[in-house]
Image 1 (cartoon, rainbow, N blue to C red):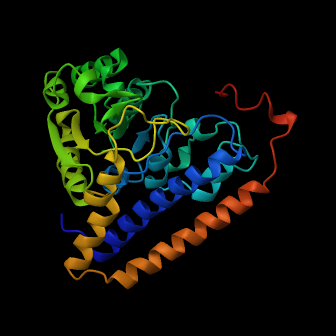
Image 2: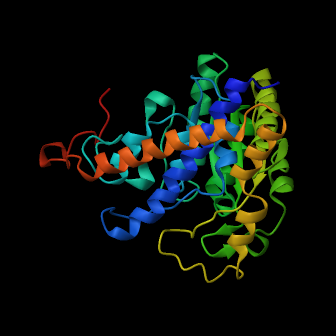
Length: 321
């Protein structure tokens, strides 16, 4: 499907929002005001946005420990997310989820997850609900190359095929499972392995929004036609460590610098849309400035936000039926 200028503007803004959100957290995290581990998504923006820009309001996603990008791409409020990461009572999860457990059911975002590979079977359950409703909705699970080795992922793939579920497996190969290179840690090709379960796979350049969008569009067309699950495999890299504070001694000298200079997702989309005459560089700069102002105000308000009180300690622990 040909994308309109408005769609492309939205995609660019979402990518810039993810990039600046994560780059700012990289600056703020060492100051000691953010509790817990933080895993940044910078470098992979084109994947989250390329997938989520294809989704309907009734669709669901489930994320990973590296979930900020997915949540923002799905439309979660950046201010509410920043407050959540700072542990504030007015955060998306009342300050109790933090970086690795952000969720917003009103956006179909079923949550990030600190357990590697755990989102896959949850997404199978969501896909089963989608099938039961019969409304054409789809469940999407994001999975990294490291999580792809987990047994829960294999079980989820098998069950999705057996039950012919409307589920998209969004496989993100960012090159590293924590500190282990994908070339060493994965004993076979991710595409071939996934196809072995009976799931068709569309590959995409994870640095190129348009490539991911087109691959996702084809996969979703296949799923929504009632054919069962499908997958996309997008390859990119993360610009920061597995977690904030990771010295990344396992990476080659200047590896990240080279990626930023040669195949950066933000540079790619800017070059494509300005080269095609869709937007001028000045128009994109205006979006950048608006996003930066939003990030600045979100951080300022999060620093001064209310902390959760003891009275909510036991609330929202169990669901009421």
